[in-house]
Length: 435
Ligand code: GUN
Ligand code: ZN
Image 1: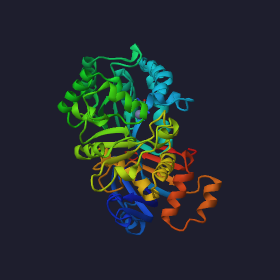
Image 2 (image 1 turned 180 degrees about the horizontal axis):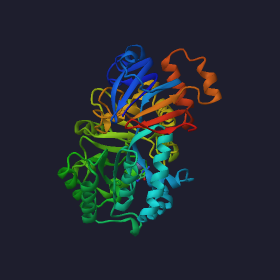
Image 3 (image 1 turned 120 degrees about the horizontal axis):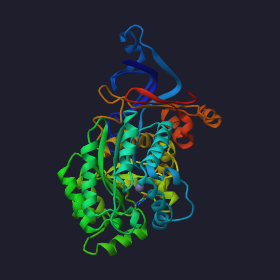
Image 4 (image 1 turned 90 degrees about the vertical axis):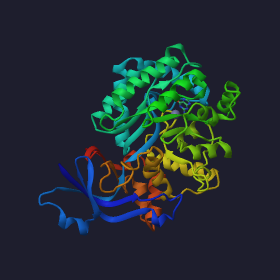
Protein backbone atom coordinates (compact mmCIF):
# COMPACT_ATOMS: atom_id res chain seq x y z
CA UNK A 1 0.00 0.00 0.00
CA UNK A 2 1.13 3.53 -0.81
CA UNK A 3 1.13 6.24 1.88
CA UNK A 4 2.68 9.69 1.98
CA UNK A 5 3.68 12.35 4.47
CA UNK A 6 4.43 16.01 3.93
CA UNK A 7 6.51 18.52 5.89
CA UNK A 8 9.98 20.03 6.11
CA UNK A 9 12.68 17.37 5.66
CA UNK A 10 16.27 16.88 6.79
CA UNK A 11 18.65 14.16 5.66
CA UNK A 12 22.34 13.66 4.85
CA UNK A 13 23.89 12.49 1.62
CA UNK A 14 27.50 12.49 2.82
CA UNK A 15 29.75 12.69 5.89
CA UNK A 16 30.22 16.22 7.32
CA UNK A 17 33.28 15.05 9.28
CA UNK A 18 34.96 14.61 5.89
CA UNK A 19 33.25 17.09 3.53
CA UNK A 20 31.75 20.55 3.88
CA UNK A 21 28.41 20.61 5.65
CA UNK A 22 26.66 22.23 2.67
CA UNK A 23 27.67 19.25 0.51
CA UNK A 24 26.24 16.80 3.04
CA UNK A 25 23.08 18.18 4.64
CA UNK A 26 19.86 18.23 2.62
CA UNK A 27 17.08 20.44 3.96
CA UNK A 28 13.75 20.93 2.18
CA UNK A 29 11.22 23.47 3.51
CA UNK A 30 8.25 21.55 2.12
CA UNK A 31 8.77 17.98 0.99
CA UNK A 32 6.77 14.83 0.39
CA UNK A 33 7.88 11.29 1.21
CA UNK A 34 5.96 8.49 -0.51
CA UNK A 35 6.22 5.05 1.09
CA UNK A 36 5.31 1.71 -0.45
CA UNK A 37 6.02 -1.89 0.63
CA UNK A 38 8.17 -0.68 3.51
CA UNK A 39 10.47 1.40 1.29
CA UNK A 40 10.71 5.01 0.24
CA UNK A 41 9.14 5.10 -3.22
CA UNK A 42 9.58 8.83 -3.89
CA UNK A 43 10.90 11.91 -2.11
CA UNK A 44 11.23 15.52 -3.20
CA UNK A 45 9.88 19.04 -2.96
CA UNK A 46 6.08 19.12 -2.61
CA UNK A 47 5.71 21.37 -5.65
CA UNK A 48 7.30 18.82 -7.96
CA UNK A 49 5.90 15.64 -6.37
CA UNK A 50 2.29 16.72 -5.79
CA UNK A 51 1.24 16.62 -9.47
CA UNK A 52 2.69 13.12 -9.84
CA UNK A 53 0.79 11.51 -6.95
CA UNK A 54 -2.08 9.12 -7.73
CA UNK A 55 -5.54 10.59 -7.20
CA UNK A 56 -6.94 9.69 -3.79
CA UNK A 57 -3.55 9.12 -2.12
CA UNK A 58 -3.89 10.52 1.36
CA UNK A 59 -1.01 12.76 2.38
CA UNK A 60 -0.52 13.24 6.14
CA UNK A 61 0.71 16.76 6.72
CA UNK A 62 3.04 17.72 9.57
CA UNK A 63 3.32 21.45 10.22
CA UNK A 64 5.96 23.09 12.44
CA UNK A 65 7.86 19.83 12.07
CA UNK A 66 10.83 18.25 10.33
CA UNK A 67 10.75 14.76 8.85
CA UNK A 68 14.02 12.97 9.74
CA UNK A 69 15.52 9.57 9.06
CA UNK A 70 14.53 7.44 12.08
CA UNK A 71 17.17 7.60 14.79
CA UNK A 72 19.52 4.62 15.16
CA UNK A 73 20.82 3.61 18.58
CA UNK A 74 24.11 1.79 18.04
CA UNK A 75 24.61 0.35 21.54
CA UNK A 76 21.91 -0.38 24.10
CA UNK A 77 21.09 -3.01 26.75
CA UNK A 78 17.37 -3.80 26.69
CA UNK A 79 17.48 -5.89 29.93
CA UNK A 80 18.66 -2.80 31.78
CA UNK A 81 15.40 -0.94 31.10
CA UNK A 82 14.24 -1.92 34.57
CA UNK A 83 17.38 -0.55 36.28
CA UNK A 84 17.93 2.76 34.49
CA UNK A 85 18.90 5.44 37.05
CA UNK A 86 20.61 3.18 39.61
CA UNK A 87 22.48 5.35 42.10
CA UNK A 88 26.02 5.82 43.03
CA UNK A 89 28.61 3.58 41.39
CA UNK A 90 31.24 3.52 38.67
CA UNK A 91 31.40 0.76 36.07
CA UNK A 92 32.62 -2.37 37.88
CA UNK A 93 30.64 -1.83 41.11
CA UNK A 94 27.59 -0.78 39.07
CA UNK A 95 27.81 -4.04 37.11
CA UNK A 96 28.16 -6.16 40.25
CA UNK A 97 25.61 -4.38 42.41
CA UNK A 98 22.86 -3.71 39.87
CA UNK A 99 23.36 -5.12 36.37
CA UNK A 100 24.34 -8.68 37.18
CA UNK A 101 21.39 -8.98 39.57
CA UNK A 102 18.86 -7.60 37.09
CA UNK A 103 20.07 -9.73 34.18
CA UNK A 104 19.48 -12.99 36.12
CA UNK A 105 15.73 -12.41 35.75
CA UNK A 106 16.01 -12.94 31.98
CA UNK A 107 16.26 -16.71 32.30
CA UNK A 108 12.47 -16.37 32.37
CA UNK A 109 11.34 -15.77 28.79
CA UNK A 110 7.98 -14.31 29.79
CA UNK A 111 9.75 -11.71 31.90
CA UNK A 112 12.13 -10.96 29.02
CA UNK A 113 9.22 -10.54 26.60
CA UNK A 114 7.53 -8.05 28.94
CA UNK A 115 10.67 -5.93 29.21
CA UNK A 116 11.28 -6.15 25.44
CA UNK A 117 7.78 -4.79 24.84
CA UNK A 118 8.31 -1.79 27.14
CA UNK A 119 11.78 -1.19 25.68
CA UNK A 120 10.68 -1.12 22.03
CA UNK A 121 7.66 1.07 22.73
CA UNK A 122 9.89 3.55 24.53
CA UNK A 123 12.31 3.56 21.59
CA UNK A 124 9.45 4.32 19.22
CA UNK A 125 8.21 7.14 21.47
CA UNK A 126 11.70 8.60 21.02
CA UNK A 127 11.87 8.23 17.26
CA UNK A 128 14.33 5.33 17.43
CA UNK A 129 13.54 3.00 14.54
CA UNK A 130 16.55 0.69 14.64
CA UNK A 131 19.04 -0.40 17.27
CA UNK A 132 21.96 -2.67 18.06
CA UNK A 133 21.06 -4.41 21.29
CA UNK A 134 22.67 -6.52 24.02
CA UNK A 135 20.54 -9.36 25.39
CA UNK A 136 21.66 -11.40 28.37
CA UNK A 137 23.55 -14.68 28.56
CA UNK A 138 20.21 -16.53 28.14
CA UNK A 139 19.39 -17.20 24.48
CA UNK A 140 15.67 -17.01 25.23
CA UNK A 141 16.12 -13.36 26.21
CA UNK A 142 17.35 -12.70 22.66
CA UNK A 143 14.49 -14.69 21.10
CA UNK A 144 12.08 -12.56 23.14
CA UNK A 145 13.49 -9.32 21.74
CA UNK A 146 13.65 -10.52 18.12
CA UNK A 147 10.06 -11.81 18.36
CA UNK A 148 8.80 -8.50 19.74
CA UNK A 149 10.70 -6.46 17.09
CA UNK A 150 9.30 -8.67 14.31
CA UNK A 151 5.80 -7.52 15.30
CA UNK A 152 6.80 -4.05 14.07
CA UNK A 153 8.96 -5.27 11.17
CA UNK A 154 11.72 -3.30 12.90
CA UNK A 155 15.34 -3.44 11.74
CA UNK A 156 16.87 -4.86 14.89
CA UNK A 157 20.36 -6.14 15.56
CA UNK A 158 20.89 -8.17 18.74
CA UNK A 159 22.91 -10.91 20.34
CA UNK A 160 23.28 -13.22 23.30
CA UNK A 161 25.89 -11.97 25.76
CA UNK A 162 28.84 -14.35 26.06
CA UNK A 163 30.54 -14.35 29.47
CA UNK A 164 32.32 -17.18 31.25
CA UNK A 165 34.12 -15.55 34.20
CA UNK A 166 34.08 -12.67 36.70
CA UNK A 167 30.31 -12.61 37.15
CA UNK A 168 27.76 -14.56 39.23
CA UNK A 169 27.59 -18.27 38.39
CA UNK A 170 23.99 -17.99 37.14
CA UNK A 171 25.11 -15.60 34.38
CA UNK A 172 28.06 -17.64 33.11
CA UNK A 173 28.17 -19.80 30.01
CA UNK A 174 31.25 -21.68 28.75
CA UNK A 175 33.32 -21.23 25.58
CA UNK A 176 31.43 -24.09 23.94
CA UNK A 177 27.99 -22.96 25.09
CA UNK A 178 28.71 -19.43 23.89
CA UNK A 179 29.62 -20.81 20.48
CA UNK A 180 26.73 -23.27 20.21
CA UNK A 181 24.01 -20.96 21.52
CA UNK A 182 25.17 -18.02 19.40
CA UNK A 183 25.34 -20.25 16.33
CA UNK A 184 21.81 -21.53 16.93
CA UNK A 185 20.57 -17.92 17.26
CA UNK A 186 22.33 -16.98 14.01
CA UNK A 187 20.50 -19.84 12.28
CA UNK A 188 17.19 -18.71 13.77
CA UNK A 189 17.45 -14.96 13.27
CA UNK A 190 20.25 -13.66 11.06
CA UNK A 191 18.64 -12.28 7.92
CA UNK A 192 15.13 -13.26 9.00
CA UNK A 193 12.96 -10.31 8.00
CA UNK A 194 14.84 -7.24 9.17
CA UNK A 195 16.68 -9.00 12.01
CA UNK A 196 20.46 -9.36 12.08
CA UNK A 197 22.62 -11.21 14.54
CA UNK A 198 25.35 -9.59 16.61
CA UNK A 199 28.08 -11.78 18.12
CA UNK A 200 28.29 -10.35 21.65
CA UNK A 201 31.17 -11.09 24.05
CA UNK A 202 30.25 -8.75 26.95
CA UNK A 203 33.81 -7.39 27.36
CA UNK A 204 37.31 -8.76 27.81
CA UNK A 205 37.14 -9.07 31.64
CA UNK A 206 34.16 -11.46 31.53
CA UNK A 207 35.46 -13.73 28.76
CA UNK A 208 38.33 -16.20 29.12
CA UNK A 209 40.88 -16.30 26.28
CA UNK A 210 39.31 -19.65 25.31
CA UNK A 211 35.90 -18.02 24.96
CA UNK A 212 37.26 -15.10 22.94
CA UNK A 213 38.94 -17.64 20.68
CA UNK A 214 35.65 -19.42 20.06
CA UNK A 215 33.60 -16.28 19.41
CA UNK A 216 36.38 -15.11 17.07
CA UNK A 217 36.04 -18.40 15.17
CA UNK A 218 32.28 -17.91 14.99
CA UNK A 219 32.76 -14.38 13.62
CA UNK A 220 35.06 -15.79 10.91
CA UNK A 221 32.49 -18.46 10.08
CA UNK A 222 29.71 -15.89 9.74
CA UNK A 223 31.32 -12.78 8.22
CA UNK A 224 28.01 -11.00 7.54
CA UNK A 225 27.07 -10.89 11.24
CA UNK A 226 27.85 -7.89 13.42
CA UNK A 227 30.10 -7.99 16.50
CA UNK A 228 29.60 -5.86 19.61
CA UNK A 229 31.33 -5.46 22.94
CA UNK A 230 32.83 -2.79 25.22
CA UNK A 231 36.26 -1.19 25.00
CA UNK A 232 38.17 1.21 27.21
CA UNK A 233 35.25 2.73 29.11
CA UNK A 234 36.68 3.17 32.60
CA UNK A 235 40.26 3.62 33.81
CA UNK A 236 39.98 0.85 36.42
CA UNK A 237 38.62 -1.47 33.71
CA UNK A 238 41.59 -0.68 31.43
CA UNK A 239 44.03 -1.58 34.24
CA UNK A 240 42.11 -4.78 34.93
CA UNK A 241 42.30 -5.84 31.28
CA UNK A 242 46.08 -5.22 31.31
CA UNK A 243 46.39 -7.58 34.28
CA UNK A 244 44.10 -10.22 32.73
CA UNK A 245 45.85 -10.19 29.32
CA UNK A 246 49.51 -9.43 30.12
CA UNK A 247 50.69 -10.54 26.66
CA UNK A 248 48.49 -8.02 24.83
CA UNK A 249 49.87 -4.63 23.90
CA UNK A 250 46.73 -2.80 25.02
CA UNK A 251 42.96 -3.29 25.42
CA UNK A 252 42.27 -3.01 21.66
CA UNK A 253 44.92 -5.65 21.00
CA UNK A 254 42.92 -8.19 23.04
CA UNK A 255 40.04 -8.04 20.56
CA UNK A 256 42.43 -7.80 17.61
CA UNK A 257 44.25 -10.99 18.55
CA UNK A 258 41.02 -12.94 18.70
CA UNK A 259 39.77 -11.78 15.30
CA UNK A 260 37.08 -9.51 16.72
CA UNK A 261 37.97 -6.28 14.91
CA UNK A 262 36.49 -5.84 11.45
CA UNK A 263 33.82 -4.05 9.43
CA UNK A 264 30.51 -4.37 11.25
CA UNK A 265 32.24 -4.70 14.64
CA UNK A 266 31.21 -1.95 17.06
CA UNK A 267 32.56 -1.31 20.55
CA UNK A 268 30.94 0.83 23.22
CA UNK A 269 32.82 3.84 24.63
CA UNK A 270 36.49 3.86 23.50
CA UNK A 271 37.21 6.77 25.84
CA UNK A 272 40.77 6.06 26.95
CA UNK A 273 42.34 4.94 23.67
CA UNK A 274 45.87 5.68 22.49
CA UNK A 275 46.67 6.87 18.96
CA UNK A 276 48.05 3.38 18.26
CA UNK A 277 44.70 1.85 19.24
CA UNK A 278 42.72 4.32 17.11
CA UNK A 279 45.00 3.41 14.23
CA UNK A 280 44.17 -0.29 14.60
CA UNK A 281 40.43 0.43 14.84
CA UNK A 282 40.60 2.56 11.70
CA UNK A 283 42.65 0.03 9.76
CA UNK A 284 40.31 -2.84 10.61
CA UNK A 285 37.10 -0.90 9.86
CA UNK A 286 35.95 -1.23 13.48
CA UNK A 287 33.50 1.34 14.88
CA UNK A 288 33.06 3.01 18.27
CA UNK A 289 29.62 3.59 19.79
CA UNK A 290 29.71 6.98 21.52
CA UNK A 291 27.51 6.82 24.62
CA UNK A 292 27.73 10.23 26.28
CA UNK A 293 24.84 10.04 28.80
CA UNK A 294 26.27 6.77 30.08
CA UNK A 295 29.81 8.09 30.21
CA UNK A 296 28.76 11.07 32.33
CA UNK A 297 26.46 8.96 34.52
CA UNK A 298 29.12 6.38 35.42
CA UNK A 299 31.86 9.03 35.64
CA UNK A 300 33.77 7.19 32.89
CA UNK A 301 35.13 10.21 30.99
CA UNK A 302 34.66 12.12 27.76
CA UNK A 303 34.97 10.39 24.39
CA UNK A 304 36.80 12.57 21.86
CA UNK A 305 34.71 12.36 18.69
CA UNK A 306 36.86 14.81 16.75
CA UNK A 307 40.02 12.84 17.41
CA UNK A 308 38.31 9.56 16.50
CA UNK A 309 36.94 10.92 13.22
CA UNK A 310 40.29 12.51 12.20
CA UNK A 311 40.28 12.20 8.40
CA UNK A 312 43.92 10.99 8.40
CA UNK A 313 42.86 7.69 10.03
CA UNK A 314 39.11 7.93 10.53
CA UNK A 315 37.39 5.64 12.99
CA UNK A 316 33.68 5.13 12.34
CA UNK A 317 31.50 6.46 15.15
CA UNK A 318 27.89 5.67 15.98
CA UNK A 319 25.80 7.48 18.56
CA UNK A 320 24.23 5.43 21.34
CA UNK A 321 22.24 5.60 24.54
CA UNK A 322 23.89 2.62 26.31
CA UNK A 323 20.85 2.29 28.47
CA UNK A 324 20.67 1.55 31.47
CA UNK A 325 23.98 3.20 32.28
CA UNK A 326 22.73 5.73 29.76
CA UNK A 327 20.06 7.93 31.28
CA UNK A 328 17.71 8.58 28.37
CA UNK A 329 16.06 6.77 25.47
CA UNK A 330 16.06 10.11 23.65
CA UNK A 331 18.60 10.53 20.87
CA UNK A 332 18.03 14.30 21.13
CA UNK A 333 19.20 14.17 24.74
CA UNK A 334 22.06 11.92 23.66
CA UNK A 335 23.11 14.57 21.10
CA UNK A 336 22.85 17.20 23.82
CA UNK A 337 25.31 15.27 25.99
CA UNK A 338 27.54 14.50 22.98
CA UNK A 339 27.84 18.25 22.49
CA UNK A 340 28.97 18.65 26.11
CA UNK A 341 31.46 15.78 25.84
CA UNK A 342 32.91 17.43 22.74
CA UNK A 343 33.06 20.81 24.51
CA UNK A 344 35.17 19.27 27.27
CA UNK A 345 37.53 18.08 24.52
CA UNK A 346 37.74 21.56 23.00
CA UNK A 347 35.40 20.95 20.06
CA UNK A 348 31.93 22.46 19.53
CA UNK A 349 29.94 19.68 17.82
CA UNK A 350 27.47 21.33 15.44
CA UNK A 351 23.82 20.29 15.17
CA UNK A 352 24.53 19.07 11.64
CA UNK A 353 27.28 16.78 12.90
CA UNK A 354 25.08 15.54 15.75
CA UNK A 355 22.04 14.77 13.56
CA UNK A 356 24.36 13.10 11.06
CA UNK A 357 25.80 10.89 13.82
CA UNK A 358 22.32 9.86 14.99
CA UNK A 359 21.27 8.77 11.50
CA UNK A 360 23.56 8.19 8.51
CA UNK A 361 26.76 8.18 10.61
CA UNK A 362 25.47 5.37 12.81
CA UNK A 363 24.18 3.48 9.75
CA UNK A 364 27.72 3.71 8.28
CA UNK A 365 29.20 2.46 11.57
CA UNK A 366 26.90 -0.58 11.50
CA UNK A 367 27.37 -1.31 7.79
CA UNK A 368 23.73 -0.43 7.10
CA UNK A 369 23.96 2.82 5.15
CA UNK A 370 22.67 1.08 2.01
CA UNK A 371 19.39 0.36 3.82
CA UNK A 372 18.68 2.93 6.54
CA UNK A 373 19.90 6.24 7.96
CA UNK A 374 18.83 8.59 5.16
CA UNK A 375 15.71 9.57 3.26
CA UNK A 376 16.33 8.46 -0.32
CA UNK A 377 14.38 6.45 -2.87
CA UNK A 378 14.89 2.73 -2.26
CA UNK A 379 15.88 3.09 1.39
CA UNK A 380 13.71 1.49 4.05
CA UNK A 381 10.91 3.77 5.20
CA UNK A 382 12.01 4.37 8.80
CA UNK A 383 11.24 7.98 9.74
CA UNK A 384 10.87 10.24 12.77
CA UNK A 385 8.85 13.45 12.70
CA UNK A 386 10.29 16.15 14.94
CA UNK A 387 7.84 18.73 16.31
CA UNK A 388 9.73 22.02 16.48
CA UNK A 389 7.42 23.51 19.15
CA UNK A 390 7.09 20.65 21.60
CA UNK A 391 7.29 22.67 24.83
CA UNK A 392 6.54 26.31 25.72
CA UNK A 393 10.22 27.20 26.14
CA UNK A 394 11.22 25.55 22.86
CA UNK A 395 8.41 27.34 21.02
CA UNK A 396 9.52 30.63 22.55
CA UNK A 397 13.21 30.06 21.86
CA UNK A 398 12.54 29.03 18.24
CA UNK A 399 11.31 32.56 17.46
CA UNK A 400 14.91 33.65 17.73
CA UNK A 401 16.45 30.87 15.63
CA UNK A 402 18.04 32.49 12.59
CA UNK A 403 18.57 29.45 10.41
CA UNK A 404 18.12 25.68 10.28
CA UNK A 405 21.43 25.07 12.06
CA UNK A 406 20.36 27.12 15.07
CA UNK A 407 16.88 25.58 15.00
CA UNK A 408 18.30 22.04 15.08
CA UNK A 409 20.71 22.95 17.84
CA UNK A 410 17.84 24.25 19.99
CA UNK A 411 15.96 21.01 19.34
CA UNK A 412 18.84 18.75 20.35
CA UNK A 413 19.62 20.80 23.44
CA UNK A 414 16.09 21.25 24.77
CA UNK A 415 14.09 18.48 23.08
CA UNK A 416 13.20 15.00 24.30
CA UNK A 417 10.44 12.42 23.75
CA UNK A 418 7.84 15.21 23.68
CA UNK A 419 9.39 16.42 20.42
CA UNK A 420 8.69 13.20 18.53
CA UNK A 421 5.35 13.82 16.80
CA UNK A 422 5.35 10.49 14.96
CA UNK A 423 7.54 7.48 14.21
CA UNK A 424 7.30 5.31 11.09
CA UNK A 425 8.84 1.86 10.74
CA UNK A 426 8.87 0.15 7.34
CA UNK A 427 6.28 2.69 6.20
CA UNK A 428 3.85 2.12 9.08
CA UNK A 429 3.21 4.60 11.85
CA UNK A 430 4.14 2.95 15.17
CA UNK A 431 3.87 6.06 17.35
CA UNK A 432 1.91 9.29 17.21
CA UNK A 433 2.13 11.84 19.98
CA UNK A 434 -1.15 11.89 21.88
CA UNK A 435 -2.61 9.27 19.53
N1 GUN B 1 30.87 -3.12 30.29
C1 GUN B 1 30.52 -4.43 30.37
N2 GUN B 1 29.20 -4.57 30.52
C2 GUN B 1 28.67 -3.33 30.52
C3 GUN B 1 27.34 -2.82 30.62
O1 GUN B 1 26.35 -3.55 30.76
N3 GUN B 1 27.21 -1.46 30.57
C4 GUN B 1 28.27 -0.64 30.43
N4 GUN B 1 28.07 0.68 30.40
N5 GUN B 1 29.53 -1.09 30.33
C5 GUN B 1 29.73 -2.42 30.39
ZN1 ZN C 1 27.04 -1.09 27.04
